[in-house]
Each structure stands twice: as C-alpha cells, then as structure tokens.
Length: 199
Image 1 (tube, rainbow, N blue to C red):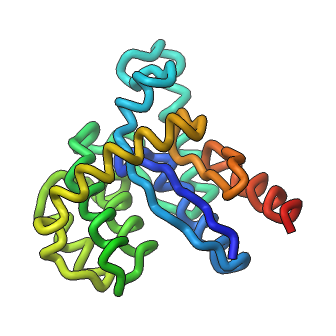
Image 2 (image 1 turned 90 degrees about the vertical axis):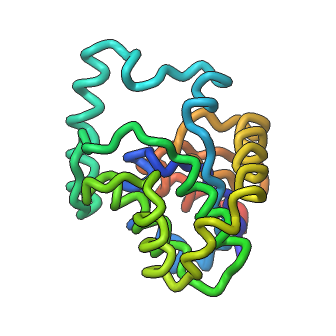
C-alpha cells in the first residue's frame, strides 16, 4: 500500500480542488494517506513564496480565473473570493490532526467539509461551530475541536518543518515514500505515473 504524505492548507483553494481526484486515486491505488495540514503563510516565508495579497495584480487576477476554471473541471462549486478568506487556519488544522490520531471517522469527508465550508459555503473555518459540525458530519467526536488543541499545535508546527525538509513549497503537495514531491491539484496524474514506476 503506497504511503503518501499530503501537505495542505485548510485555506488553500487548490487543496479543495484536489480532493475529488485525490479520493479517486486513493480508491484506485489503495493509497495510505497521512494528512499534514500546515501554516501556508509560514511555508511561503520559508521557501520564497509570496502571499496572495502581495502578488502583482495580474497574478491575482489570473489566480481568481484559474480557481474558477479548475473547480469547474473538478465538478466543485467555488467562490474564488470567499467571504472568510483569509481566516485563521490553525483551529481547523488542529481538528484534522486530532481526528486523524483518534480514527473512527472518514478523513476525506472531514477535510472536504472544512475546505468546502471556506470555498463554497461562505463559512468561517476558524469558527468552532463550523469545525464541530464538520467533525460530527464525518463521524468524529465533535469534542476533538477542543481536546486536540495542544498536540495539534505541536503537530502543526512539525508538519511545517517536515514540509520544508521534504522540499515542499506550496499546497497541496504530495510526497511519496521515496521522497518525490508533486505540487498542485493538477499533478495527481504525474503522481499516479510515479507510483507505477515504483512497482
């Protein structure tokens, strides 16, 4: 069973757009995913990235158009300029980390609910009620929104360090057991080809 580290941000539109293809690939290949939410702003600062609001206007305009196009290709509803963006991604990230450690629920459903809340439903994913609803809807104890805060914070920071060490500089990025990095929702077919080569 191929193991894949999924480095992503809960405020990343492309992490949201990647989910349908990632889920299909996971089913097809029996992938063993480890979800590693991280602080995307800190990752940019460490690896030479530029926050969205500091990019040239032409880059910002292209990003909005591209989010809409890519979401359409993925069959997902999206608002490229959601009401609650940017927001604090840490609380939702801690909940995902706690849920993964606890087990017993559907991780894809949880990640999808949180990302869709931001990018399709105009909800603030820093809001505890939104996080609790996502946990419960995915079959997890909603109390994980509170109980996983300390360990979640530690893992969240560690995920950033692991990402930088692995050569990750954007979200989503997929890192295979042999250290290959695939950045972007549009590189999942490349990931699949690489997994074929590893057989």
